[in-house]
Length: 324
Image (cartoon, rainbow, N blue to C red; front, side):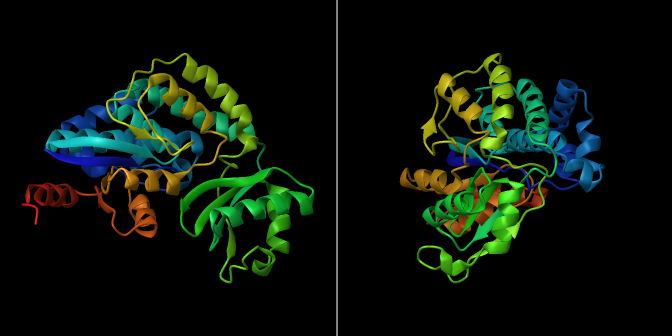
């Protein structure tokens, strides 16, 4: 039995039609969509396959849709191919799918939780008061310096790193006034080390995720998750908040709560997985966002995507092939 790590994507990977081939071909996927629909009283089939892109992009819809498709993907994978899961990680909302895969939380409870998480995150900050920007060409220290400099020089706060996605791709999040000021006053030569190709790109997001402005949502989700049953995970999950492998139920829960207003340490998590020789990954969910990020982190990572029957069969063929 081949040992692989499972990765679960986050917001930004969604697209209308995601998971359709799974639903059409596999009974277990159809049952997963039905179970997800029943849990939150929303037709997941309709939302994932037929909804307008703008409806799917609403945070309270995106989060359960991603969890549903990711869970259907890993259930089909493990039914069709005898894969031994050695470890897992999920990007932001993807961490819930990792805990479901590790049987730490139940799928139906997770669906209810992420629906509430989406609503709490959306309502934590009034529209237009917060935003996010991608910082290209900066290292982690330069991104932190830029946030501190922006707060000090603009007089607006908070601004902080939200996602360490890959080398040279860090997302910052916070006060819209501070980010607007930064766009007007940003010059690469001001940053220590003068990164010549540094760029700031505003992102089209509905809220300033993973920063101090999300603390009301974190408080709300603490109540939700404390009332939920967590079990020890069947395999280690490298968590966003500390980039460390965790299996203990109480730690998994606490890190999931703190994750809402803390930075997503994705690059650091993947480096930690690399240090433990976890190089073979399967991206369980729609698209290839994580595959693209891992290529930038280290080309030694081998990441399989599962977006079609062909992808599934090719993975099966690869795993059956004798090692050279």
